[in-house]
Image 1 (tube, rainbow, N blue to C red):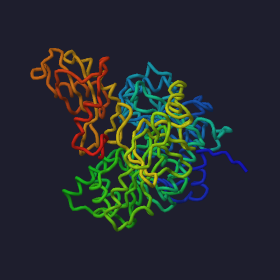
Image 2 (image 1 turned 30 degrees about the vertical axis):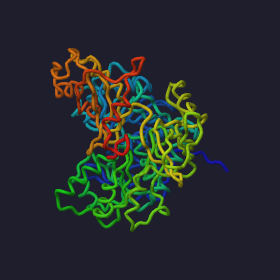
Image 3 (image 1 turned 180 degrees about the vertical axis):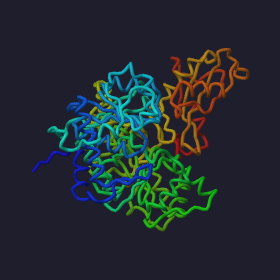
Image 4 (image 1 turned 90 degrees about the vertical axis):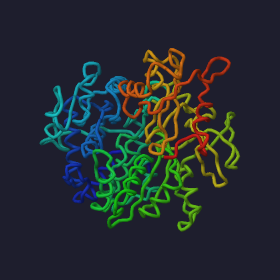
Length: 538
């Protein structure tokens, strides 16, 4: 038989079987059962429909990792809306573009970030504005708790939904121009959640610590998988190493995700403090974004006592499509396991991951030949929102019917991939994608900058960091008429904080082709000459 795959089923199942059990530890210390979490989601669904939200309307959520994000997301799904989570590190101009591009009708925004929306309120189509603390926000905002008060399942009508409908739009960081809305269906989200449940061993007795932003491709699918399993969510408002260790110990955390920059924060704190790293449960930790060095994995496994899982993917691919957690390929007691664990790894169940050359042919599995990673799987996105040409190119550039990641990799004899470089001018710093083009555009707004080329530079803390090679307007790199710190401050004012330039080198000229195109590859080669590959490794 065929049963539609709908994301509403995850919370439905948790309420059905675990209603009296704890679902969420909120950031203020309040504990909610699945019955209580579900009732609050029902109330939000009813409130949205009272305010005119209909099946297929877009509702944005701008929130750190609080219980409000979970309630808002499931409320949107239950009302038949399309959940549109927003990166809380963006600028008001970024939000203006996204809210207009998606045609967002309503928004829930945490009080810490609502002011950024307030600044562009008159420039967007959004009509409903809800926050968790209207007293802390300028402008006319409704209170989340007030709008759900007294409302429940009986006050909203869950529409008939099909599994191939779009249920969420996750915006990329605009690495090749404007941000693109990655459109994902009930089916793709459901299957992805099934896959991470299997590959990350998620079960009902897990205690999951939210160190990964929920907006990141719906928290890598964990807003679904953890909920559907009936496990516990432990929420956070930010990343603090001391708090993470204390929470792991106090709440007996068993599972978490951490970008390389978070792992480095934990390592630094561990080195300087007497730390208890576990509670009553063993800890599993998944990392992605850039490959962690072997030393990081070794410390976390041998000293923290945690089990590391390195996974890989993109917003467009679910996100997760590979894992290095292939236990038949390494011995848990051997140091050789670290060289395998730092690889991006093997494809998930039902996922076809290939590395192909310019003609679309598979490269040799010799761990030397380099090609582009392409993928086909049920967790891969449906399309880019309102961008048919970009969608067509993404699925057909080298080989028809596969999503093209833009990442260049080798493949070993087991079929495990290892990312070597990037096809696109993309910087991944602390798990965040940064467009070099966007940073260059900001630099060009400064009168002392004649030419600029932005590339990723190695960073022990972030894996990669933003470096700019600048030809000054006066042509003199020794006396450029502006300081490196001034340019860093200038980009900090123009861009989201994580996108700003952190390193500047003044040069007399940039390497170019015969036609005048800047050869960033030469700059990257020089910058990474002491590294074993030209992508960050945490």
